[in-house]
Figure (cartoon, rainbow, N blue to C red):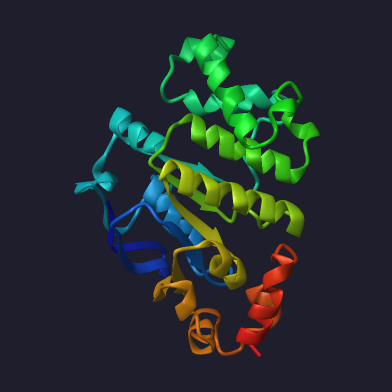
Length: 268
């Protein structure tokens, strides 16, 4: 379904991503882990075409999406929705309008400028918000919501695109542990119920172990691990985070409490 072939991105002499290759043959829940600066975000941004690749290919059902331009590129970005660490909502707009913005690539400029959404579009947006447990927030400004609620609005906006792939770039990095669990539970449920592929950049190996079917570990722009959560041994954790890695680098304040002991043991 999705094949990454020798994908690289260079910024001057530095390789943010260095010849990354992997194949996803089915719609799994994939975690990409590693230290800050390992290349995780750049990898997802290249897949979505938000960042240009220096070399390599991104093949979706055999088509190299890196060659797409104009309307074809926008259609790909609609099929491959992004969720960001900082939510990227319009703070002064109400929640429902933010969710409807997921349709911007599919509707006319006039519709977007004057919010001329159809009853069907509005009904679908409210149904998605209800699914995520925040339909009662639909009329509120996005800026009035908690961080966890705002991230669920961002997930709802992504679902409005009806994507085949959801790319989540550090979706819980700005959240407290309770809201982090709510967001990760929602993403896992979307994967299981909808059959959508989810690729999530995660700063902590404990979260990847709990939620993911497959884990890709990156270090200094290179993929150094590709396997199941059960294969995340102490040695593998050291390969990903470095021999000098500490517990605090492999888990943060957003780590889910039930799994913090695992991360500490892996790096002790």
